[in-house]
Length: 165
Ligand SMILES: [Zn+2]
Image (cartoon, rainbow, N blue to C red):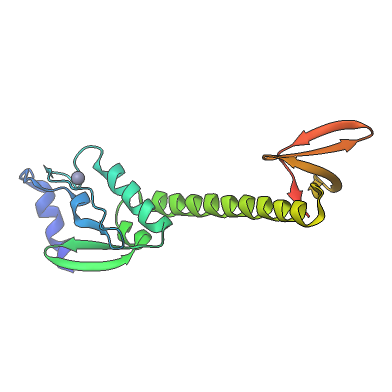
């Protein structure tokens, strides 16, 4: 490898501060065409704050399952968002940001499905009684927006921490 041989010589001499285009300008969301629109030059990889710009661009792309195009020296590479972040210090944050976005979308879909099921039940049975698990016990009750309302020993209780059964 030539890189290892030339590296010490390079670090001895004071580095010439060459301004190069900010790395964030290299990336485009293949599906939406979203890019940072950055025209800045910098002696580092990123203009100040632009690593964060790129990070959110990649998370948005990854969350929607879009591929990301990366153009380096006129050569385009296309791959998933996590792969595109490889080589940068924030790559793991892109991966966990995408994972969080997926978890959020799953939770939202589950809530919507539970609401739809409860609504359907109410329409088909004429009652809004639903059964839900609260902790380990299962109760009959009704749904009021995101709350499950049920009765224990004659006392009404409400919770958002329930699971329809
Ligand atoms: Zn930039």
